[in-house]
Image 1: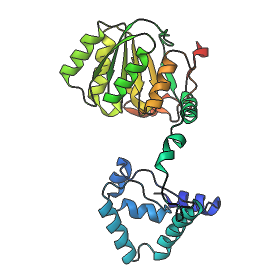
Image 2 (image 1 turned 180 degrees about the vertical axis):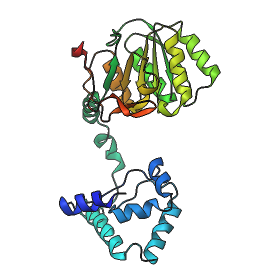
Image 3 (image 1 turned 90 degrees about the horizontal axis):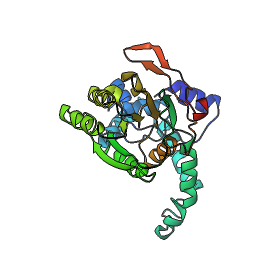
Image 4 (image 1 turned 90 degrees about the vertical axis):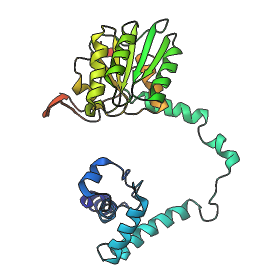
Length: 297
C-alpha cells in the first residue's frame, strides 16, 4: 500500500522493473484501514502489478474498473502492469507452451531432494524462546504425551512425529476458543501424562487459549508450548517455562519443531520481531533477534 516504498524505493531508487505482487488482500489490517473496495485501488496506486487473493474478486475488479473510468488510475498505469505480466509470461515461454506435462509433475515437484532442502531450511527457523527448566532437548524413548491445543492436522502431525521417537501419544484438539469443558478435560488428561505439548495459534487474541495453557501449567506436568503462527503468544502466559516459536503450522515446520524438541537439531532460529509485554506495548519482553540454543545451557 506504500507508494514511497513500491514506487519510490523499489522502482525508482533501486531500478526494479519486474513484477510486484501484493500479499493476500484478505489481511485484516489493510481491510480495516481502507475497506475491501479501496484496498485494490490503493495497491495499484502504490505500484503493485498483481493483487493477491482479494476477498471479493468481483468487488475488487469493479472498484479498479471504476477508478480507471473516473481517472483516479490512468490507463497507462494499468498498461505498465499488463506489460510486465505479459513480458514475464513470454520470458517463461507460456504462450508457446502454456501447460505442464502432468506425467512429469511427480519427478519435478516434491522430489526427495526438494523435501530434504525444505527440511534443511526449516530446521534453521525454529526459535527456542524459553527453556527455563531445561526441559529441552527431550530424550527419545517411552513416555506418555498429551498433544493438545489448536489445529486438528497440527496436533495429529505433532503426535505422529513425537510417537516416532518412542512416545505413546494422545491427541486432544481444542480449537481457537476452547470451552471451559474442553479446558477441564485437557487438564485432566494432562495430569496423567509425563509431558504435554500444546500448540497455540494467535493466543494473544484468544483469552480461551490463554486459559487453556494456564490450566495445563497448573497440573504440574511439564508443558512445551509451541506457537505455530505468531510468536507473540508468550506475552500472555509468561509463567510457561518452555516456549518454542515455529511461525508456521505446515507439516515441514512441525517436523522441524519436533527435531528441535528432541535435540536432533540445535535450535538456531531468531525472533524476526520483538515481543512486547502484554498490556504495555512500549516495554519489550523479548528483543528482535532473541533465540536460544542448547549450547547456551
